[in-house]
Length: 358
Image 1: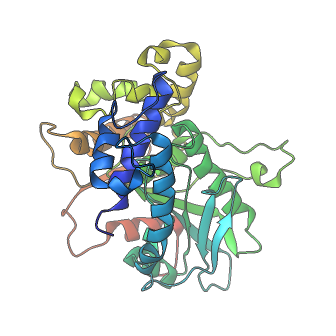
Image 2: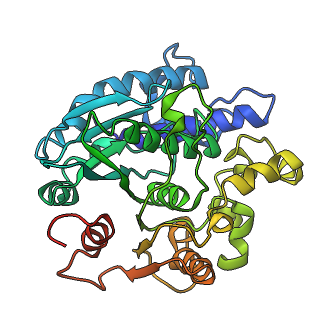
Image 3: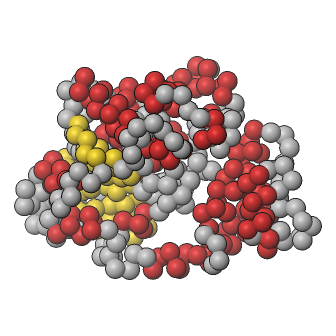
């Protein structure tokens, strides 16, 4: 294809958010993202009237996804094939996971990989060709990689619960998949990092009275590796440690509210929103019982220059460590390039999973 599918996905994500916040239908006449989408993909205008509607755009996006599915799958051919692929852990089409079963005579620990992508993109398949996967399997550690819903399908608080449910589901497979339920860790980057941090800090979601046996399982992890994390998904706290944000970094004036499924920023002052903000606030969940955390950072330190640096600034990791230190929770920060020739994440995971070779 002459264009990446990602700009098109972003265009129609923005159009969807526009439709949620205004009574006016989003088209290329009133939406800059759709205007750019039409310029890049004129064939998306199926009725050839010179105007790209959101309906036309979404239909074209679905068509593009089908065409790009095969080429994207080829990227992971070099890695080991999952023992079990596309296992459903929930009702949504993106509630799927892949599982690699390590060779082990006794129940093995598990690392759950969580992909990044700003909660609007990314896929579990990216982990199949990574060195981390093979290294962990070679050490007798089983691995799982999960998909979860995007923001176009669910608010962030529900996406976080997708990840928790995936951990509970993996744990429920203890006997069948030869898993040691007491040794499950999480690893991810960007959105996957923040989700892993939430799993490491959120109080256990196990419900002993649930009729579904999966929901009776613990959602807790015993260690977390977080690369380029966000400190909290209570976005109202960011200014306290990052400083004021440049309005130009936001995709829309109400982006902070749309993140949680609300329509306007003023909605965040409601009691319902306060409950949601607390649920998404990893910093407020940190307590002395929490799992050890390894933070790795990739963005430059210093004044924040753009949205990417704002989302992944090392100040996020330092805020996590400050709160962990206050609660006597183990938290280590390693700056990008500081451990050349080593693999601190692998060493950290093997140490806290007490796997072979450590």
